[in-house]
Image (cartoon, rainbow, N blue to C red; front, side, top):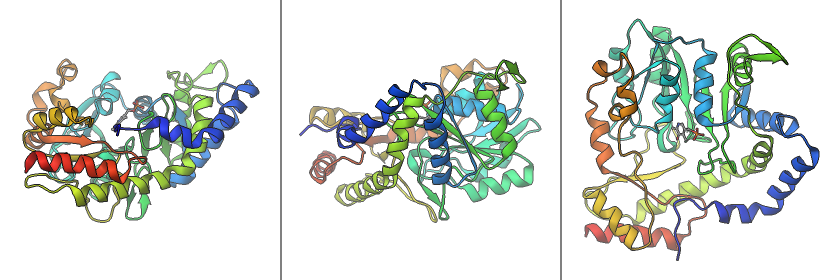
Length: 369
Ligand SMILES: *Cc1c(COP(=O)(O)O)cnc(C)c1O
């Protein structure tokens, strides 16, 4: 029994006729930049999430940077976000001179704590950037309420939660803008890098679209400084096929998580907690344990892969220590630091079998028995 963290090959083999036909069509069309496939996927993704506008781009990281640029944020402005996320969330801001300011996370959901946001707001704060970590929406009601009262923008980092619900609406449809990633291992993954910006605001949509294409609406006329970040046409054709399966795959992840929850049985294992009024789509199935590194070693010896999401909270990342204005205000985030030492992600993908999950859960449980 070979177990993988993510099994992209099995998934491709199931979809091979459809995917190959979609890719061939692009190759035969000669249209490799933008075109019909990109436009179709943008409409389909917007419809799926329930937003008016979707703009494809080259990666989730680019989507974040373009979203920040579309809001017109300037160097020295601050964005409040979580220290417990993938590096790109804050990197995208810092790269263009925006200072990431962190607040600590919930010990239960690992998402940013809304009740700590107001104390972190200064005259330079322009936006709040919640991350729907591991596939579970952050506390959007509370975050949107603060944003409204304090006149801040909200950018959702929805890279891990395509299809997750909050009060029955899709994550990614709440903020002024939302950003997602189609990195191959994400719940909706391309066969290469790809990303997307979503919004209900026509002006922000227009800005984002311009910025993603060198600040240009009309060829060779540049109104803004932008970037070259387009959604690749072949990737769009692949994503057009895969989007039809997303709900089915997310449901499989939820069934797999339920089976892990049932089978993991030992004192001291903290299983994922799902807060009220939202669904979790388990981009990762992450548990907290004692002796985490020893468990990981034990799993490796049994042929079970695992991963640490994330071993170093962002305020401890050397890269951010080099940003002027950063260090003194981003001191200590005890919950994020504590959880970084205990968290471990087990294999999670729609193709996992009941037998595999049972084997993994039993191996973990026995380690603590
Ligand atoms: C994957 C991810 C990103 C970056 O997406 P890329 O497509 O890899 O650039 C950003 N934020 C979060 C939370 C992610 O998980």
